[in-house]
Image (cartoon, rainbow, N blue to C red; front, side, top):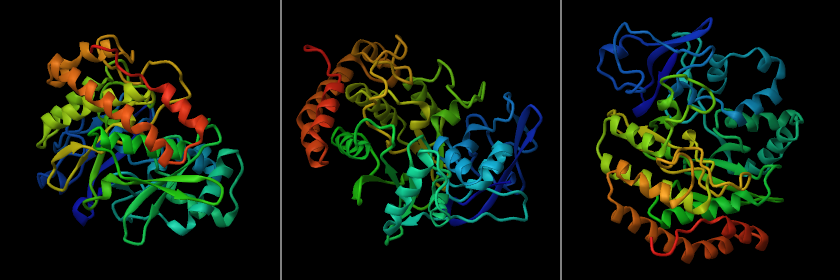
Length: 399
C-alpha cells in the first residue's frame, strides 16, 4: 500500500504490486474519488479504475522509487542483513525504508497497517553514525549498538555515506560524510560549492559544517520538510515513462527535458523555475559538476497539489571524471560541457542569446570573486583548493 501524509493527514493513495515481469500501480478509493492531486501527473494521472503497468521486470514506477533506498541505502541494508537483502524485491526495499524517505510517500504491506513517519538521529550521535557508516563502506558489519544509527539512512539517496539528523528545534537534515573513495575533503568542498551557488542566484538547500573528532560532516537541510511535509518527485522518476530503467533513462534526459517536465506540472512560477534550471546548468558547467544526473534534480508538491522546482542539492565539482561530459544533455551537442553547447540550446529555456550570455558572464564574475574565499572559509586544504579551482570551466573572453 502507498500512503501519503502531505498536510499532516495520513491517507491511502494507491497500491503497488509486482506481477512476474512487470509491476502495477493504481489509485484506491476514496483517494481517487476525492479529486486529490496525482503523485505523478505526467505518468500516473489520477484516474479511477486505471492500472498503470511498467514495462521493465521488477522495476516500480519512478516516483515510488524516489522514496525508497538508493545506492547507499541498499548498501546499508546489505550490511545489516545480507540474507534478507539477497531475497528482497523492490517493494521490500520501500517497506523497509518507509518513514525515512524523501517526500511524503510511505509504504506498508496491507491497508490495515499504517506506516509511521520516523525522524533521524540526534546531532550528538553524528560521530557514532560516521563510525558505523565507515564500517559499511569498508565491507564490515557495524557493531550492534551502531546499527540503529544507520536505520535513518536507509532511504537516503545517492552513493555517499550519510544519515538523517533531527536538531533540537525539530528541523531535519542529512549529514553527509567523506567517503573512503574521495580524493578530497568532500564535505568541505560541497559546503563551499553550495554557498557559492546561493551567491549565484541558485536556490540551493541550506548547508552547515559540523566538526567531528576525526573528519567533517556536511549537514544539508531537507527542503521537503521546510514547510511541513511535502511530496517529492525526481526528474529521473518523472522521465521514467518509457523504459523504467533503474539506470540511465536515455538520451532524452536533458536540462531542456527537465524544463519541459516543469512545464507539464501544475503550479505557478513556471517561467522562473525554467530560468532557474538554465542557471543551474550553467553553474554545473562552470564548476565542473558533471555528476548532474536526473536524480539530482526534482520537484516538490504542496498539500494543494501545486508543484515547484526543488532546491538544488548535491552540487559540487566531480573529480572522479576529468572529462567535460555531463550526465544530462546540455544542448544540441549532447552532454558536451561547452559554452557553445549551452548557447546553442538557450531558446529551449525561453531565453534569447543576449540573456543567456549575460547570465553566464555574471555568474563567471561571481564564481571568480567568491570561490577562493569560500574554500578558505571551509578550511579546505591548499591542495584541495588548487584542485577545485583547476576544475572550473570559465567562459571564453568576449562571450
